[in-house]
Length: 107
Image (cartoon, rainbow, N blue to C red; front, top):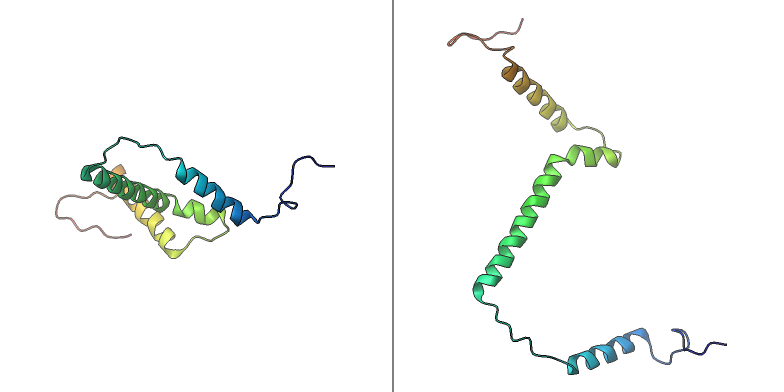
């Protein structure tokens, strides 16, 4: 035998309990004595925009790893990025440098 009522034995539904709780908490309001100026709102918006930018850059950097984790195959764009990265690495290593004005040809 249960001493405390359970959710199934309560006469009111869950929504009614929520309404009663909100009504009681709304009646018990304490003043905050705080002031939020317009600069605070713009600071919050700036932080939100910065967070969105950070998430989008992070997703862009790790997109191929996220895609591979869910079973996606490498796309043509990913292969193009790899080819471009190899080309930049060759340029930095000095493998494809020529004299000024000299045209590089593929042999």
